[in-house]
Length: 513
Image (cartoon, rainbow, N blue to C red; front, top):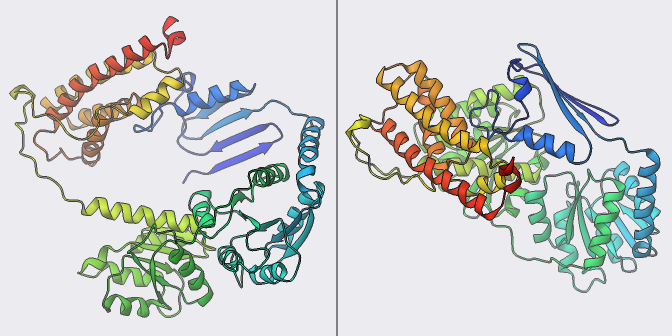
């Protein structure tokens, strides 16, 4: 197992892993566009972009590696003196002070250290700060005092969470604080949390990873905009889904249930393994299970094994493990039993939503009807097969990114020629029934087609490649003919795109070299 170590020392960042390493002949070319090492599906643009970004503000990036031992990237950032940092922060606080002076702010968080940190930042700009350790205390403070200008609200709190507190504040129009600015202040991922925060009536969301300067800047922007995002409709991302939440801890079930109901799901509860199995026998379908690993009597691992052994449709139901154990052995035990994903407690709503959304998407894909197509003759010489309809021929978005990065140049044209030559090599390997050589050609074709935006070709090769990796020839009789056809269509389409981009002058500097 490889170990990744991240070291930050002033303006230097070291990223060191104990993986397979990079061959010496590849190292000098590592930061060139369309170069990959061991990732055939990658675009080969990541390191080229990193180097360009580092150079843009005066930094550098370099790599050292020994095959079989390690790979280490060194990012060297330009020096910023403590005096410059201090002066920058002081200017931010000075500009913000007129907006905050005299304003009453309520900081709601069950973490006393976090409340103190927020208080210090807000006091620097003249705000009048009060604190509350949970939602119920916050409601009492808002109802029994003069109007506040802002509530800085944590999401995950005991007694009453931030979402519920915000909803109660907005619901009571007789309360002088019902329309106070509310900013969610949380460490949870921003995507789903931002949606749920606004649905609950909050005005914005700020990450707890923000510095004091970033916090003040974000709150100043909120004050200046004065936006109101009060919503009464629930977030319906899981509308129509029934999710079984299993945990012997009542409070943990209540948190998960509250999160999932906010996403539109119907939630069924269970306290232990036998209770889960009994629920599956009741009327009404269960679309997914969120289950604690450690429950008395029959835990999540044993319960999952029992479910996977069933002969009905529940044998494939998505199961998300919740566990307080973060060691690899525990995670592997969950996955080995048949759980689809493992989440470490305390659960975060954004991560839980994303996990279930992934599983539902995969479930839809696996159950999608497959349209039967007549088999084509296996020999390429037998004639051009029917037009392929796998989707768009080119990846327009990826090509636009190449243009924006000035990477639509001679290397791109070389990639088009490499597709042609690789397909010719593939045809020869198939004719010779050389599976190993076929494997190698498909590996190269998978990488280069993705790199230069030949989307339909890339997607079709991705379907074929895993079987060849496992030592089997593809079952589709016309697979080679279809690859040849997609290659014949993709290469001229890519050349046309290149010519049009050149005519627009999108990358004139690169072409003039």
